[in-house]
Length: 328
Image (cartoon, rainbow, N blue to C red; front, side, top):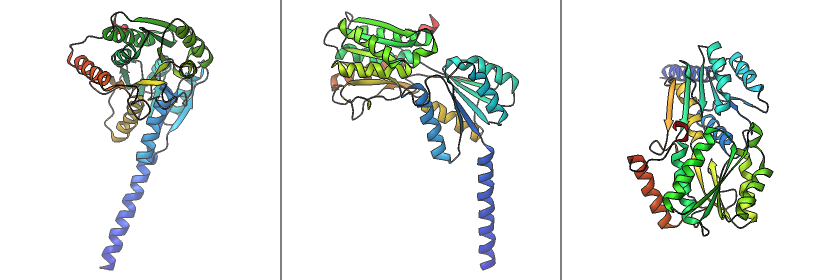
C-alpha cells in the first residue's frame, strides 16, 4: 500500500513538473503604444487583460512601452528574438511594425488591436466603436440641460472620427435639435498624452454652452475630465471604465473590452486555439458598451437606462443603423 502511494505521489510530482515546464515554454508578450500602460484608457485596458491572464495562469509576460515611433519595430524584433510565443501589439500605429515582424517570423503569432494586418500569422481585433459611442451620445443628449454637448478626440485619424460620428448620431437620435461641438487634440502621437490641451479644449466647449463632453483621447482625456469637474459639468470616459476617476462628474464611460481581447489572445495561444484573421467586436459580442456602477448610478436615471437598453437591442437587431466612419 505504501509503495503504491509512493508511486502515485511520484506520478503526481512528475505531472506537476511537466505542467510547469509547459507553462515556462509559453512566453506571451505585449507592446504598449504611445501614452504608456498606465494611460487610464486604451493601453491600460490591454495591461489589465495581460494581468488577468497572469493571475489566472501564473504565467509571466514580457512587455515594452513605446515612447518613440522608432521603437515599435525594435520592440517587435526584440520580442521575436526572445522567442515570444505570441506578441500582442496595442494600437493601429503598430501595423507596419507588426507586418514586418510577422513576415520575418512566419512561425510566430501576432495579435494587433485596432487595425487589420492581413497575414497568415496575424490576428486582427477591431471594435465597433461607433455603436458604443452612439449609446453614450444618447446619454449625453438626455443628460444635457443646455442642448449642447461636446466631443474631444486625440490624434485626428479615421478611428477617432469613427467615435465622433457615432457619438453625434446617438446624441441626435435622443434629441434631434442637440448641438455637438467637436475638437481634435492634434495630428501627431503626442495628442494621446496632452492633458493640458485636453483641459483647454474642454473649457472652450463649456464656454460655448456644452455641459457634457465625451473624450476619446487616451491620456489626454484625464485633462478633459478634470476640467469637467472644475467647471461643474459632466464628462464621458472611454475604452476602460473611467467612472471612478471623478465620481459625480463622470456621466458614464464608453467601454471597449480591450482587456478581454488581450486576455483571450494570450489564453488561446496558450491553449492552441488561437486563429489568425479578423475578429470584430461590437454590441452584439459585448465588445463595446456603456458603464453603470456605484460611481455613476445616481447620474443615469432609470428612464435613461431603459432608452439606452432599447437602443442597444435595436442596434443589435439592425433596426438602428449607426454609420461606421471607416466604411464611408
